[in-house]
Length: 304
Image 1 (cartoon, rainbow, N blue to C red):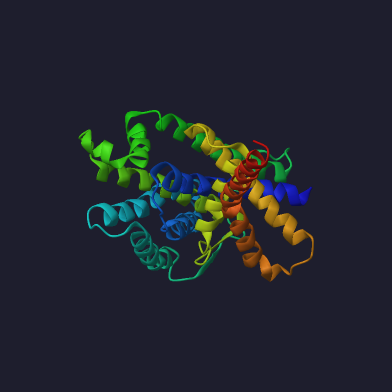
Image 2: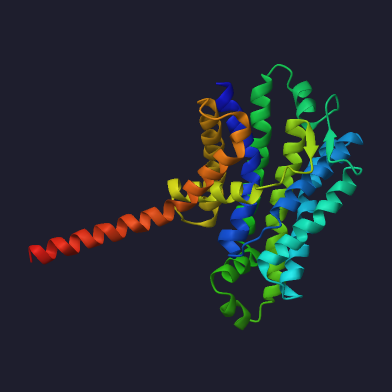
């Protein structure tokens, strides 16, 4: 039960990260690698403000902190014509120094013994089990985020982002400023990622400068798993499926480590294998379809 609860809690927290990755990769169609920097930026801002005695503000400012990093990536891509992948790497590299500065030149910031959003919630709902509270709080953040994004993507600006991801040239021909749309989309995407980092900092009780390493692969795996199990339909469905994919991904990680086949320090390689397996699902599906078509073709050739 503890395994499932922990996986659900982390899955929902990382679900906000996966939603941000979904916006960049699936809706906008841009490979954005700045997530590693913006995730840690949100985490660092949340931890620093919690140390200063403002845990709620720390979580809330995680979103605009991520937005700021995403906007920088967008400007590098659109105004300076830097390749999207390189622009993300530049932002990620620059944010490393920024994150260290926010954390007071320390690579690790402890929140042990301090009032975090979770500890305040424990006091507020003292009659409720702590594990339930730790589950409901991320669930609330995820629910609000998905609902707000679902509503946003039905507005004019949201439809412009979706149209830009589908056919950028058509959007340009419609006299819409594609550069502004891309900057807006990347800001929102990384804002979700920063919010995920901000909540995680207070959930785990510390912030580490290396927390964002490999986080893009985690988000992308959640997107692929969600799409593979629940299909690709509308944006609202895609956002919800992505959160579900994140929870399933955390359960897979927990189960893989629970079997005791691997030591704890194998976490990264186990994660990498699961990510690779998730990303290869579309290729396997296409291979099976081709084999089925080939078999049917041979059958018709033998028995016309």
